[in-house]
Image 1 (tube, each protein chain N blue to C red):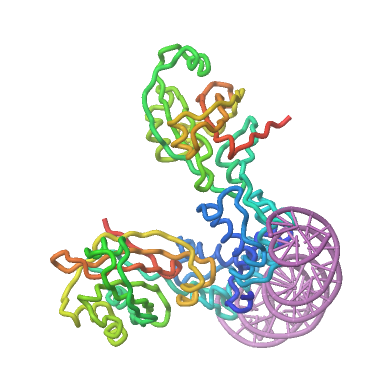
Image 2 (image 1 turned 180 degrees about the vertical axis):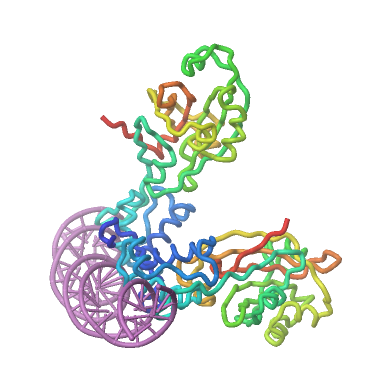
Amino acid sequence: MSMQDTASSGVALWRLVADGIERGIADGRFAAGDKLPGEMEIAETYRVNRHTVRRALAALAERGLVRAERGSGTYVEAQKLAYPLRSRTRFSEIVGAGGREPRGQLIEASEDVATRELARELGMKAGAPLVRIEAIRLADRTPICVSTTWLSAELFPNAGAVFAATRSMTKLLAHYGVRDYRRGATRITAGIVDATDAARLDLALGRPILVVDATDHDLQGKPLMTKHSRFAAERVEFLVES
Amino acid sequence: MSMQDTASSGVALWRLVADGIERGIADGRFAAGDKLPGEMEIAETYRVNRHTVRRALAALAERGLVRAERGSGTYVEAQKLAYPLRSRTRFSEIVGAGGREPRGQLIEASEDVATRELARELGMKAGAPLVRIEAIRLADRTPICVSTTWLSAELFPNAGAVFAATRSMTKLLAHYGVRDYRRGATRITAGIVDATDAARLDLALGRPILVVDATDHDLQGKPLMTKHSRFAAERVEFLVES
DNA sequence: CGAAGTTGTCTATGATAATAGACAACTTCA
DNA sequence: TGAAGTTGTCTATTATCATAGACAACTTCG
């Protein structure tokens, strides 16, 4: 097939090939680490020139989805999501910047009371009412992390329902009039996934996780929410900027 | 803006302009009969050459969305076919109500056996003989949708030939003594047209389709046929009544 | 080692995309 | 009538898209 065969669609051929391969990766036909078919074979299935296939693969490689090994083949990258940790950290922006679609999903929302630790982080008294939101975040269809978020039940009444609707912490805060916020200190540790999180993250038992604790503040420095997140270590790599 | 300014996306500039104008028509910024901004003005808003705008407008004109009048302007021509989804849904009536002439055409008819899913929909056993009818429906000469329809080969023997002659599902059923029928649950999703359907619907590659799965029942609730239809999203607008 | 298969790179050609400028043909409106 | 604004058409140039062939560099495996 060449562009002039079909009524010109305004979409480059290599883009169609790249989209096809990417869908194959997204829906699991090609798993992480798998070897893709050879360039010649791909060219035949899409009925395009090998160079067109190379263009498509180059685009995917630039986004880090695949990696070519000379003489051997092209492999699906153990697609670790590059996750820069800055003061202005937004999951949706990070995932979107990688050309993938961010999704958030509420697992559970409940009322809670502040432990001494939580109270200190959030600048309130121990025993104060909190909203606890358990959520999962995905890039395309790949689970990236599960987070437990605590917010003041007084400042953010009904926060669980709002998050369920907006599926985004940023939008949740905007709903209460918070237009911007900053991340405070972020603590990173590692651990082994427990059974609950393993199921949520579609991870095998015994695999490592990155554990991140962080508190977000408004521009005046007032604490807004504190988070306890568990990332699938095999899918993420944090970038700490110096 | 030129293609080399942005990281090359594999989508032609004129296509971006055309999509932008089409969205303006779809969401009502430009109503049917309205005059579009002049080519120069469009070129400035999108920061492209006037010739690029003309390419975009030509693509829209070929699809019948706009009509250029020399010396005067370019006008919005058509509107989408309003397609209400009710229990009594007849393609011919919907199209006829819009003052257009409905047409149906057989693409292919073949014998098939019921998968478990089809068997459940049609209330039969898996492996039961089916007739599969691939058909296209048009309003005047514009393709609206392609449908794959499955019917019991025992209840509707030779259904393919009957449809080829009558070109209407309603008439086909009447031929077997079914005087009236109702639509059951309808499932609507969206997707991207594949190469086969693109050719049948006269759609460019990469354009969206509405995917509708539905099963029709007789007045006693017995399943008659189940359909898998793909509508050209740019030509149809579903109306779900509350 | 040697053969087969893979990715990387080079040259070359034709079609398409996008830009630029100029002018004709036509409509609208004062 | 005439000026302003619109679409239609022409030539020209540059960059990108897609194809084609050939060969190098490398990996894998018998």
